[in-house]
Image 1 (cartoon, rainbow, N blue to C red):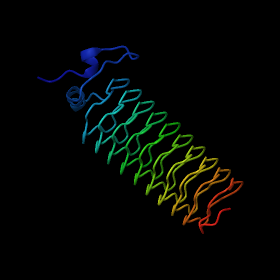
Image 2 (image 1 turned 120 degrees about the vertical axis):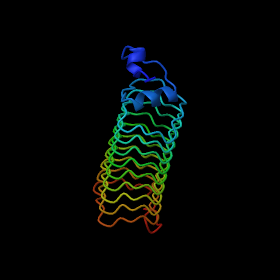
Image 3 (image 1 turned 180 degrees about the vertical axis):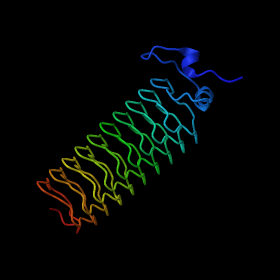
Length: 232
């Protein structure tokens, strides 16, 4: 039997989508259904699933297992991904505008050219994540770990990185205009050609950081540890 599309099975109002299990979702996706907006998918297990271009806007994916899933070009605008596992997941060019990703595990995930404007990534793990060319404008990353992350040419304008760990990260050419890096760890971080105009580096640790060609106009350097280890 060919499974009916999810919308045909439920025909729910847009504001009240029902829950759906992993098998149902994958069966519906296999026959061309891509719209799962506002679906209740908390704790769902979709490890290694191919969900390219799926619409999960406003869906609840909290504590879901999406390790190694392909979510490239997916619509996850305003989705809830609190404590969600996304290790090695592919989120390249995905729309995560306004998404809740607090405490999400995105270790080794691919987020190149993704949109994370106004998203909440507080305490998230982005260790070795690929965020090249990503848009993180006004995102919140308080206490997040971005150790070894690739952020070349990323837009981090107005981002809140208070207490974040960017040790060994590569931010070559990144835009950090008015970024808040209070108490951030930037040990060995590559900031070559990055623009930190009007950024707040209050009590940040830049030990061993590379600042070749970095724009540092009107930066707050209060109690900063400089690349040579000297307190400013």
